[in-house]
Image (cartoon, rainbow, N blue to C red; front, side):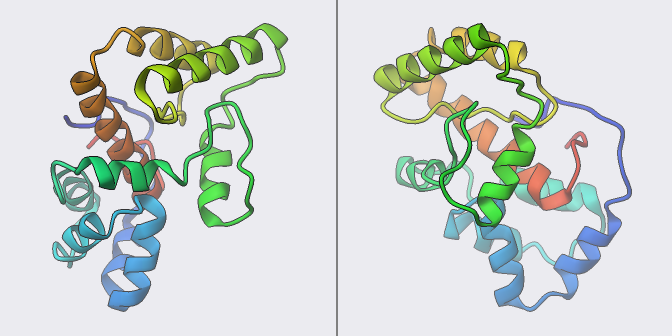
Length: 179
């Protein structure tokens, strides 16, 4: 799956320059905050130097495809439930908080529906509900959550990997651009 969202494109060329110029270790640390899957990080690193942001996006979406179930579990471990604040205060938590900033849970009914939906999803699939929250409001997230509860496990695994890669793209490029 390719990214399916669009937004005004900020100047992200500096991100490409920074990743290209970074040492292997520094670039790996940066990328692991985007998607904490070592095989994926290695795959993206192997695509350096990036000629431009679309080349970086291509690497983000195609490195280590498909992710294994264990890699997905590892990646999900650093993501808080949608609508909840992360427990820790590190760079990954900062990303998650910023990405979920548009999901306003000040409405008690929205908060209750998210909590119930998260629990239903976890009961059904045995993992945290993951969605690219950046660029979406609470109602869009709730609609997606309800819809995805009808997925079979195989379909949901494909959707989760797609969402992980969209989150990784946002984090790697600093934008909501189209891949």
